[in-house]
Every structure is written in C-alpha cells, then in structure tokens.
Length: 362
Image (cartoon, rainbow, N blue to C red; front, side, top):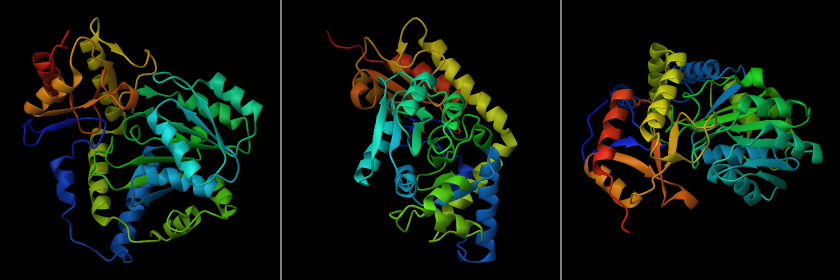
C-alpha cells in the first residue's frame, strides 16, 4: 500500500476504497467500439469470472450505475406483488424507500440497528403473508452487521414463489458467496467496495427464475430491464453503452484476485476484522454482537473520545476513517478494512488512531 499523506489520505472507510496502481492504470487502455469483438470478449471474460467467484451460472450483468440503481432494477422488474424488506440499518431501509418511490407494495421485517435478521423472524414473517420477493443486505454497512445469508436463504427456499434478492454491495469479493447452492435469485455489488475499483459499475447476477418473473412486470422500464440485459449478455453485449474503462479495471482486479486466490482474500478480510477486535478489546464496544460482525467494516463505539475531532486529527496524518452513519454518527467509528487493505496498513492506522484520539470534553 502507498504511505498516507494529508493531501492523499489512505481510505479506511467502507467505500470508496483504495485502488491499486495497476488497476488504476488499466483505465487508460485504448477505447474500443462497444459493439465489436474486443468489447464482447471483455464483457464475456469479466461476467464469467465474476460468476465463478460468487458461485453462480446465472447471468452477471455489468450495469453502468451505482448499486442503488440495482435496487431500483429489482423493484421495477420483480416487485410484481408485495415485497418483504429485511431492515436492520440504513441501506436495507433504502431498498424499501426505492420500492415506495416506484409505487409498489411491501412490508418491513425490522430489527434494531446492530442486530442481525434471524431465520426464525424471517420464517414467521413469510408464514404470515405471501410475498413475491424478500430483500436482504448481506453486510449492512451502516451498522457493521453481517446477516446470516445461507440460513436466511434456506428459509426463503421453503416458499416456492418467493424470490430471494441480496445486496452484497460490500461483501462481494470479501466474503465467500455460493449463490446457486444457496438459492439466491438476484445479487449485486458496487465496484467501489471490496472489489476495489472506482465508483460507477454495479455487477448484478440474475437467475433464470428472476428473468421469467421480470417478463410479467408491466412497469419494468427501459434502462434497467432485466430481460433486455440478459438477452444482450447472451450476445456478450450490453443494451446501452458499457463503462468500458471500469470493465478494463475490473479485469485487472480479477487478475489480482486470482493471484491472491479468492480463499486467501476472504481469510485476509477475516484477519483484518480480528485485528480490530483485538485492538478494541477491553476498551471499546462494537455495535454488532460477536458472531455477526462484518469482516468489511468494524463499527466501534468510541466512548470517551470526540469522534469528529479524532477523525479530523487522523486526516491530518493521512488517514480517512468513517464516522458512524445516521443515528450512530456522533458516537461511533466505522473502520473500513476491505478490498486492497493489508495488515501492515491497518496496523499503522490503528497505531496513529491511538496516538491522536481526542478526549471528549467533560
């Protein structure tokens, strides 16, 4: 990793995250026609490799948008009946807000911030009412909770007509995903998180079952139409102009993931999480309880210190750490350790955090 400087701080926030120099340089590759053989080869390569990494043979669509666009795509294509949103933080609540903005019907299964969605609670909700789809955020970035995706998927599979839709915005490329084995119908991630790319690209896997459901959606729109996207992907194309520079960068990052190996990458993220837990032990509490903490971002209650002043002091040393999000903003730190962050970088940041933390005024 590059050394931190005040003019170019190292990002230890839950996204955007650091981009390796080789990956950044890939964006300068020459432009190509987006309907030519070179473009088709690029799209085919990255889509196939991402699918292999996340354990699916479903179409992996390269969408030129932020992940919120994928949220809207799922609602316009698949919200053909009531949708159940599992809400345990700001981004799971956003998915519900997107549905409401689309004028579609839905309910919440909501728990307190810092708590996971449990299989028992989900089972109870699905037994009370029939839903077209269930939405879950795998790694809830606002709270640092990692929801138990495999067991939640098992619950949804008992309801044959219910699609399982997953926001893996921060977990994809940091936590093992086995989408086909688990029965996930849609899963998407933003490029600027654990994939360690600049913002602007969302990768979205869509099962055949979800595509067939989309065919029945009268209001699925144009730009995010899953039917058009999957038909285009069958030709190794996109319906509209693809973000070619980001696809070049994705290919370069996938090369880096292959070199490290996905399993080693997942283990590195777990070690980074364990190091933050070791650093905090006996001094600071985590928002999530043990067993449900995300290996992508640690949300730590910074009792006894002025969060805003501490973060400002860290920026002066060349580190950018996140404050809490929403209702936790003034009391918590969000320490991102995802993508290309290595153990030496995290160690240096924690050392400086201890050195420059500003005590709260009495």
